[in-house]
Image 1: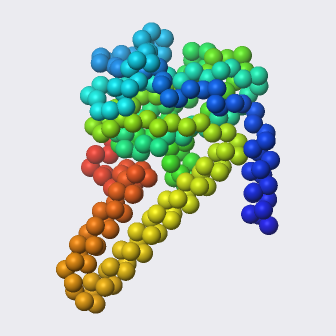
Image 2: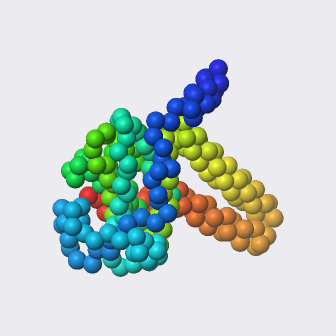
Image 3: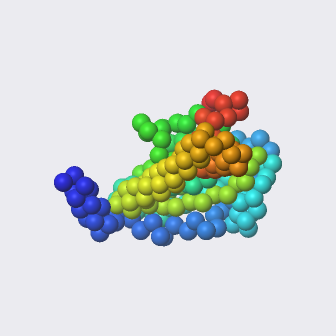
Length: 229
């Protein structure tokens, strides 16, 4: 019964969109390459953000990179959920400003202590409440020794629940499949001691570790590089 009620809520919510997230273009964001120790007030008010820098910001860089997302002002207060799918960025900060004043800050980097975290881990999700008659702007700060790809998506209402559910199902199936293969090869290796199955075990362990890192588990695997703050 609860399952059918959940599906009904999703169906109803899909027809109750209060804000068109498609109005916000995420394919080429205004970008600023920070090369000096600029203050936050300078970043938020005077930094020269340029869409021409966006392509370079998706690769490797020794600089701190900023993105800016400006949301069209809604007619009434609405909630929008931002999803990011790169869990390997070392330092990742989100700053939400309304009328030029910072109202919220989230840390979501692989080497950071996460702020405003829910009771359980479900990926990088930022919930924004857009206010009417206000300038709603989100700044994204990222710095990493790895690739700085920034796959962003905006969701709302039922779309958020569907995306979270489908993502959970996908990773559950993927990890379960690898664990089943790992257990099978482990049993065969114990029975026959074939060296080839030892290689299979190592391969599946590598795949399992890679999938876990893609899901964001590097925060727990590499504690030596863990940074608080």
